[in-house]
Amino acid sequence: MDEDRRIAAVSEVPTDGTLLFTIRDGFDREEAFLVRLGGESEASDAVHAWKNYCQHWTDVRLDKGSGAAVRDGEVLCQRHAATFEKGSGQCTHGPCEGAYLDAIDVTVEDGAVYLGEDGYEFDGLGPSGDHDLSTGSRIDF
Ligand code: FES
Image (cartoon, rainbow, N blue to C red; front, side):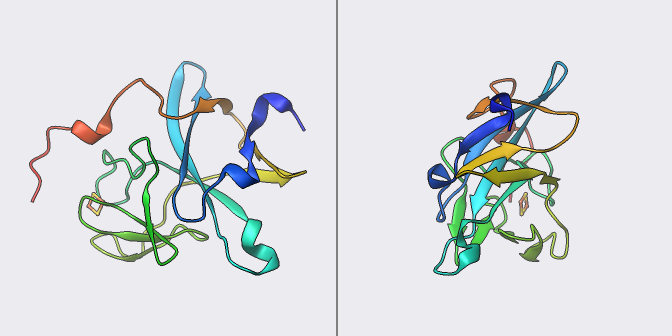
């Protein structure tokens, strides 16, 4: 595997939160996050990656830098409480019910997670630093 595309060790990916990272397409940066399914089964180390925005309002980040909230195995949007299955990315409850988070292709090899998505480079762990979508000017309710 290309070490430049190594995101993190599987053990670094929380089962009760998310791990934020940044990818780059040329000069454009985007945020995404890793989730690990967890549990006792062999599939517990399965890791998925999703782009870091809600499907209700796409300018709302799910992980604001310290991990998104995960409740009962689902990622929670803290704006209007939409919940997304970690494994499928499907919104199971909330204003965007039935929508899916945008997937980023990752692979696991020798205990590490690698970026598999064509057209992107791994930029680093943590926020992109280019913008702060969490402080948009929308009027909340
Ligand atoms: S912005 Fe996420 S549920 Fe409304």
